[in-house]
Length: 326
Ligand SMILES: [Mn+2]
Image 1: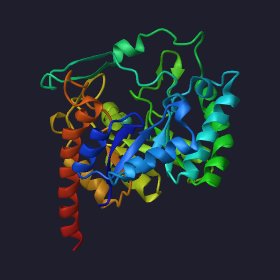
Image 2: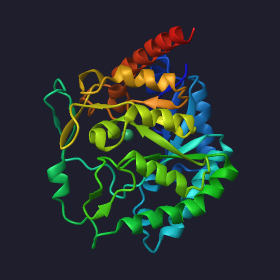
Image 3: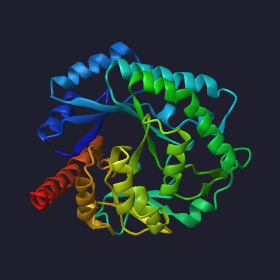
């Protein structure tokens, strides 16, 4: 396969989840680590357990370090947080885990609500109304400037890129979600594809900085994010795409709900074919599922059907593109 379908797991994931992931023909898992789990032996034990299910850790991340208020806003304790990030990078490097995740959103993904959508068949998914998000007061005690946010990003890169290069670990940068220029007094780092170009330039060409190509974010912003098909070609050719988030929404902003791939406004098969045609070698995941349904399957259960649908599109795209090349 060109791309490798992936499902997230945690050290606390039960063996049954790992067994079912294996039965879906998945070989790659993204490992969510708690801060206290960032230890050589904890990671090695998990890798051994996963190996019994023929699963490999494609990447690992720690949410408090990935979305870190002190680092993103340049607060007084940021150096200690950057040290903790670098220590995680060294642990991943020793475990031969090739990349970790960063997302420059100190308050995480912003959404208006979790609700049953018009197109979710009773599933509870994330709903976003731009007017509501943009009406929010400052999340911090003051508004920040775009220059400050980019300076903080540069400060972080200057201290992490050399460590990543030495450890052999890359960073996959996710866009701000939703991709609006400024929310709650905090300018976004990445709300269009030019933001990615600027970020890559800030890494002075180092391959330590890669991207999470979140199709969901591109689709949420529509043409305002960039030309999705051209951007896929550009970032794949530059070997920047470490992870693809294969997610659809019912409509672009100002209002959207997250839906199954086959229920959204974008032709996800055309997008999959472009990824395959561009030689994308990333891991690929559905990004967000619906909320788990009480009594069934937990978080892993919500990923199974959409991941299977995605795998089907990937299989078909590889067949079709393969025939065209033959
Ligand atoms: Mn995403």
